[in-house]
Image (cartoon, rainbow, N blue to C red; front, side, top):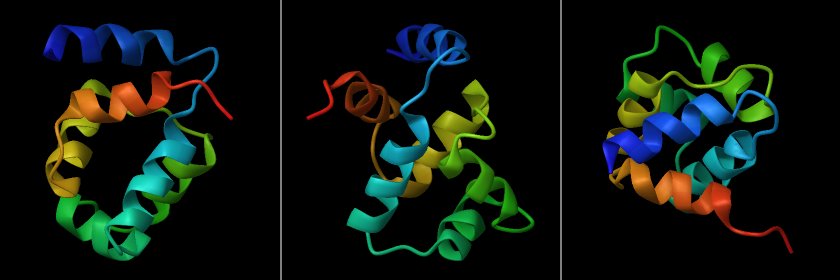
Length: 86
């Protein structure tokens, strides 16, 4: 599944649902940006803010670190991104 996630991250450059998905997953777990940033090992929540707003795209490593911090497989994040929007 890791190779699927890697390929998806590479395709995200044009259009991304990553930010909104990350925000929904974070909210669903009752985490603040600060709390998730701490779990991931970020120095501050500013990078997380940029990811959620779509100003930055995650690296493959960051995708897996976020998935670990959210206690879900990275493939679940990718699956959420691929769901059609309502």
